[in-house]
Image 1 (tube, one colour):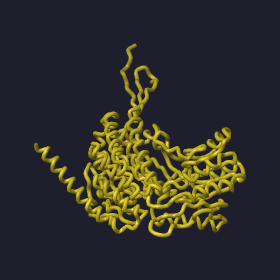
Image 2 (tube, rainbow, N blue to C red; image 1 turned 45 degrees about the horizontal axis):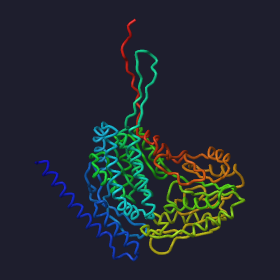
Image 3 (cartoon, rainbow, N blue to C red; image 1 turned 60 degrees about the vertical axis):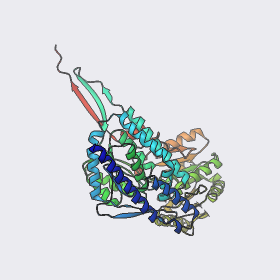
Length: 533
């Protein structure tokens, strides 16, 4: 009876908090103050998500929603409108220590569950995400800005990571080794590494969470998740659904806010055994150096600056459409977007013409409008970086074919841009732009194309288009990249080993290889006693 009363009391407390949160959320988003019809539609859909209890304002530690210890908050803004979507708790070192302790304690029991038992929890999480997918898409678009169609696709991708990991963890295999002596038996076990510090980016605020969290939980690890402070609402909504799915307290914890303080705490803690990070190469290097202090396992998915090569025997219509899709997806804010387009000189002019047509066919706007194909950049600083790269290229001889400027009015919008006659001494060749910019370079032959494509410290993804099968094999093997697409740019899926080489990272996410990053290998030698002679 006492337990029943306590559960009823807790439910009443949760309902009261949700009611207060919804009232605060409505106050934070003055629908009447927005001039855009799409913005009003976005707010209306978000209100539905809030009423469903999915627009959270607190961090999630040990199965409970918590404010920052000092009461600090930060604003989550819609990059399409400039309006505040939500005020959320701004957490730091103290809350992170609490989250790590909770995850460490939960690991003791979670790792003992069978893979089938853990999979059952993950499947319930997946089903709740599916049921609430429209609410989640509205949350994602409101804080990130991407078109609602891309948000829905991201959620589908995230769900795929959950189900793949849940089932693949059932097939984790050890080994039996032939012993050197008759009275011994040698076996190899795979065991969960422990508490994982997962740090996710703003450009894919849902799929990057499940891509890290799902395999970790599936094999028996527990997680302290730090989403980007620019887009924490998606991660918090996923945590709410994980809670409803029956995920035990401490198995998944979410802290957001003071990124340096949270990061340092995760790195210094001896209880955190692994770092899983997606973000910039610069931050990845700092995390790698910090992880060395306690010798943590590290998996890093970092910068890209991907080349896309078009040979003179390629299907130009297909290549141009694919290049535009890749370059302008999520307003160019993806680590595997076609950031350097290399075209053989014999078909260069025709390709530029086709690419310009696709760029001119895009529609900028609020992502909640289903006709919009390109949303905003995440911050004004992102616009400034694109502007700087365009100005640098033009100063060195490039021509603006399409776009080349920020859109007037509210929101962080930049017109999809195509540059021709781009030289190799430009910043856009040497640095990752992370914006809707498609610079087109010229090459003479296969050897030069490969040399230019590999002339970068990055090595995440590369693409090329040709109708020559022999060339296909040669170029695929010659490109120094972790992933290569031949006549294809849309290969991302939970079944592939996603990751790069060189300064684009370490380890792989997805596929059976991705689970290995969350496992330790243990060798066990069993002595059977001495044989009688």
